[in-house]
Image (tube, rainbow, N blue to C red; front, side, top):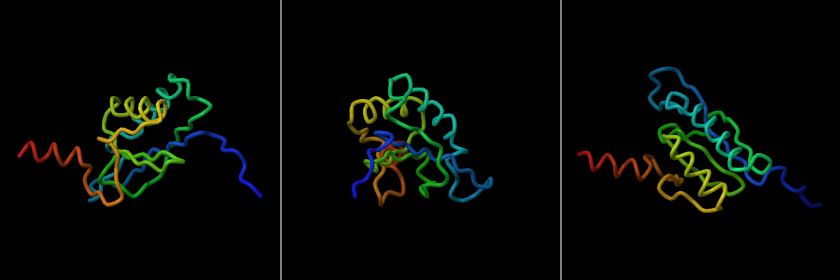
Length: 124
């Protein structure tokens, strides 16, 4: 038996989880993830990806401190994004061109995204 063909070429799961105010891990929703997800949906549609890519809200992806976070399948590539510009770059580079946005990628052992760590170090 073989698997059926995928319904979408790529599936984006965008964390929109909400935790109680003051939770020590924070949450993606309080960092603006719903608006960023909505922006990604519109940007993907504008790029002509409507039938090829699905952008969905997700519950907790368990990387709260790094958020807002999203993961793109089937590649399994994780990103953090804070601005609509970050989202636009992910749509263009990853979803349209098939590349990667290295500065926004998250790795399994990361506690703080590399670009945020560099920014914090520069501020000291």
